[in-house]
Image (cartoon, rainbow, N blue to C red):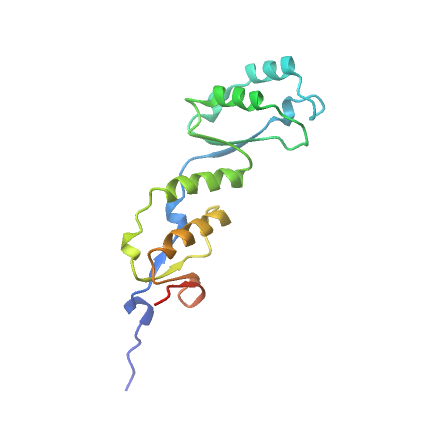
Length: 169
């Protein structure tokens, strides 16, 4: 006589949460302004303005853009403002920082509006591996939000989860 195999995970109250489901679609682009600086370090206003003027910013249409400088140059705030003024109405999102900073910004916006009521008083596993770039900061954000709602928060997969938080009784 064969015993029936029972999937205890499927029959449990355990809910999965996949940050990848909240990935904001669209191309990501990093603009490194060191290319417009003298020797990559010195911002000369006339030269910088000319470089910005000669750049076709329409190629960033609907892109999520990270503006940064890969060198140790001192960049005045007006230079970033000038770039923002060129990208407004073209780029979907513009942030100052790296591509990871950009992803963090996008996830922060999503997390601000997410409805987690379906996770109330339930054990939740936040999926670990993803095919899309999910910044570590997004895991912190969802942990903070779930702690006020879920009975417990784990990380990983049902077969090998790591406990992160358990609500006190």
